[in-house]
Length: 344
Image (tube, rainbow, N blue to C red; front, side, top):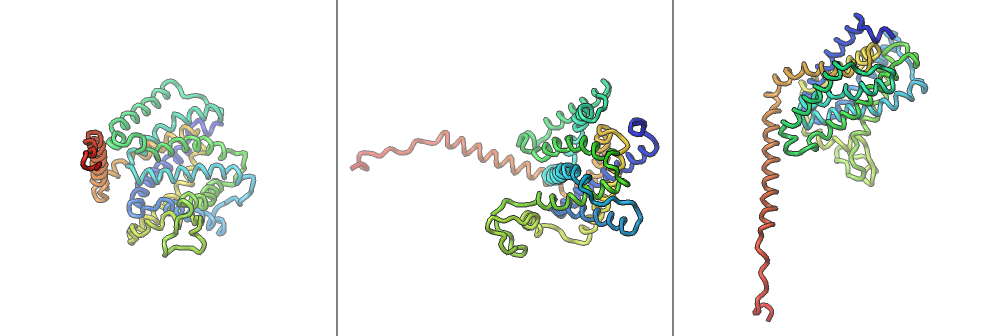
């Protein structure tokens, strides 16, 4: 397949466009989640806007868009499940950690994808030089983990969402390359784009479901929803809606994230159709690395650094209190034995 091996001008354009969208969306999502701490809601809004936009292209005839056919929908259902899980894990990881942590975990994904590329997609194994470069990424990630204050305090619990994101996206990258192949005969790449986003709306709402049986807050209560029922997004993130900042600037940020989300969906499939799964996987951490400097510029207004230090200090105080309580119990004086007068 010469198109995938030789990086043509078309492939270079797709990679540059995808890299620009990827680095921008990570930063915008971090801002949006800061003001609207509802990852499922934000992701669903992005999926819905993208789907409506593509349907508009189909209705107006501006682009060829495939209809929903079961032969094509079936493989994309499996991909959608993985896609939704990676998006949600990414959002949760951004909510509880920083951008640097996501980039570090994401940078290790090509090492796994290169093996899946070889085992299932008929690609060659990375050359010794490429393998060495991938191992350097892993060594750098290990160094970051060992020096991170959150890891020293909480261990792997601090990276639970990032770890889940790492394993799921590794499989998603290889499977995504398979289903964008010519065997499904899509009219254009708007087909995979609308399939991914349209099929992801309802699963993302379901991912936001709270444990069944909990009552729904009064403003969003639904009849019959309390006795063991779940209402997805409404029961999960309604309690955090009051803490969200619903200002004009926040809604503008949300709208921008939806626009960039539509762009990255299309250019993601466009790029994936032209390059190997490993090459596509390497692009994303490289693109997201450019958002580090931008995130530093906004860290002071968002208070991210101060908030992180405060959280670390609070956890340290809690650990100290627990340790002191255990020490006091260990050296506690024995209970007073009843004297003879008490027994009488």
